[in-house]
Image (cartoon, rainbow, N blue to C red; front, side, top):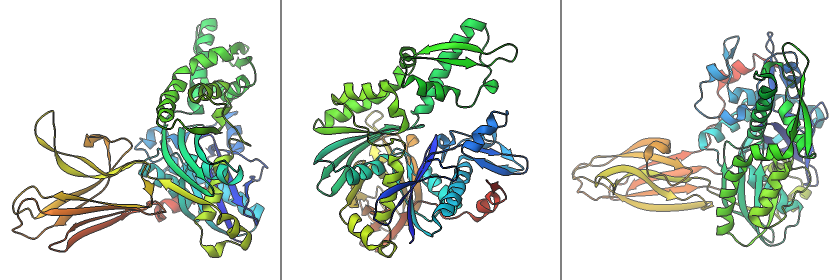
Length: 505
């Protein structure tokens, strides 16, 4: 049987799931028997790559490991400065993700001994296109048959809707992971699940909690010793472990190593930790309050992600929504399980057996546009009184997809023979072009002698698989320009060859 796989490519951990023969999503353990594989990478001098727990162990001996790189994936970062090179090979977040996914593909095939027909990889709902593309590219470079991606809270919504028999109504999917925080509002009606709104904070997650805890402990350490903590001496994951301890205890001890002298044992209370992270939680509360004002009829808040285990997070949700949030199963695994369902929903029918087909036929899932999409157009700047090129949005964030929208635009000069075309994307309706992403640029040539105010029809379409189709048409002359903006995760053979020079264990 061809396998249908979902992968939660996380900041802290990466998780695999698959659809079993009955159509039920199941977690696939790695070769170490772990449900969660730490998203950690170590490369030795012989270019052997260690992934997960084995990589983390190397940090105990002072060797370099890479973690938290997902927070930079697809961003314009100075990789040589931040990530470095290994034997003249540039290390990037995309490459590191590829190493993890190659190891997991080996583990999956070893355990399942069958072909993989379709893979869905998840990413945060507020990731821009470049970051989504880099995530999917990692899957392709690792030889997973990546057909599509899905937003993390949307994947979780699919799992809840399919497995938890949700009553009709609106639900908030509150996804607090290691690197990002997302919240989506879904509406369930019978077998149909629709995402109606989504928001979040890209740089807010469990790793930020760890940093706040580290600052708190460092302050205590300096007060006692007069010097700062030497990070290179500390056991890997020490602050993450302390955070987890404070989720089940009111107080815990943390031992800080010194270059000269015995470890210093410090006491940290949950109250001190909660005070340190209060500004981060306050940011999420602002977003949640806005959504709850917009959707006061939310039935339940469903928790996703490891950071929702922090008591202060649960208390914040209950305070903001006035409801005790619900955590079902393992919050670290829900996204991967939902992604496996999505892989089945978007797979070719020939990839499904009868039981899978019958079960998935009962699931109807509707996604929304996660960004504003539009073009550049001359518009009056009310402050300056001048006409300036500004974003003009055609598809609004939150528009149900698939969708097709056409808007008319007009030439601005007599005899204009060319229209400069730009496709723009923004997370909020920015009016300043400096703060939007340009997804594509082109030109629409026009015949000579046209009068001012010639109509140009601009059509934006988002298909069910998330591909953006744009067309620009001058009907009288038949001139048109079309472009399809699909995720650019086709194989980069040069990059793939460079990656294959490493040996993944």
